[in-house]
Length: 323
Ligand code: A3P
Image (cartoon, rainbow, N blue to C red):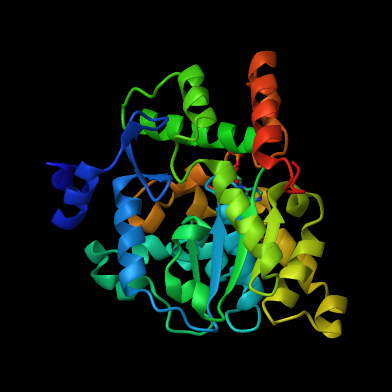
């Protein structure tokens, strides 16, 4: 049964039967709900978090389009928020011993019924930090209606697509599943059929919301953060209401955080080399591939880039958002 296959409840199983279904880059099924595509487990998480999650004004929600730097933004946010409490720079720093997905749990999993509402993963320290990929229009009401803050990050769709494709290829290999071809994956991407897709809807949803409500939503692009990480760390701390003091600035705390969370540093941490997501899930190493801007040029044919450029022009035109 679907429930057995995906470990979702009967309620979700029944819902899945009513939804449009397609497949994503690793060949597994995804379902369309309120305009976006989901793997069953994420759809179950979405529905469950909408029922059970109660945001507090002090919460911080790290939202990304997937493969746009979630692992990084979670680490940066955690380090900024907890810099004075948890000995972030010590040799037993939580960031050294724990993958950032375990420090900043996905709301979708934390509140999944399979997880007993997951008290084990929900920190009782305020401010709590959660992550999610849920599109703006489908967010739990309590996130929209409370004063909690959202930091959002997206990425150039060219690199995001390659990162997603490579990620699922690696996982398919680990699980000895035959992934679909690169060309087929690109086709699906262009049609917006991929987890949480279409990506432009996701990005534009948060972009517009951040323009309407800049105190609620801070909008970052991976490329900008990569280019000047210190500037964005400082901006994020200001936004979250925990600005760096002059003393901290002169002591180089911002640069320390940037270094701690840098791609090379995180990739080499023991927990990220040998550990697994939530103890027994994916290898953490899957979250660290190249961490570069522009890697797509090694994969796209000229006709693929042309199609992608046209698509982006069409989707982002009139939005002032460029990549
Ligand atoms: P690449 O596949 O292009 O290397 P997510 O965390 O949303 O799953 O995104 C994964 C992408 O972010 C991967 O991109 C990964 O290498 C990159 N990444 C992971 N940690 C990073 C860090 N600390 N700094 C910059 N990029 C990072």
